[in-house]
Image: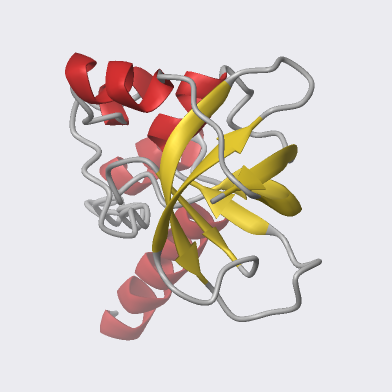
Length: 157
C-alpha cells in the first residue's frame, strides 16, 4: 500500500515538473499532492540598483548642472577615433574608458555624425589603440546616441 502511494506521488510530481498543466494540478490535488513550489532565479544586476529604475533617465544620476557643464563646447588635442559601447550604468559621471590614453586625464569626446560633444574623464584600459572603448551612460545621453549602438567618437585631450 505504501509503495503504491509513493509511486503515485512520484508520478504526479514528475507530471507537474514536466507539464505544469491544470489537469495534472487537479489530479494532484485530488490525490493530496501539492504542486512543488518553483521560484525563478533573481536576475543578475551587477551592482546596478533596479528597484524603480527602468529607464536610462532614471539610471543617470548626474545633476542638471553637471550635464550643462559637460555639454559646454571645448577643444583639445586629437588623440584619435574609437568605437564605444555603453559602459557600466552603475558608474556615475562622464567618462570614457579607452586604450587611447596611458593615464587618467580630462578630455572630450565628439560624435562626428551629429557634432555633439561632451567633456569626460579619459580612463586608460589595456589593449591596442584600435580596441573599443566604453562610454558612461551620462555621456551617451548627452551625445544623444542610442544606448545599444556602437558609436564612433573622436577623442580629444
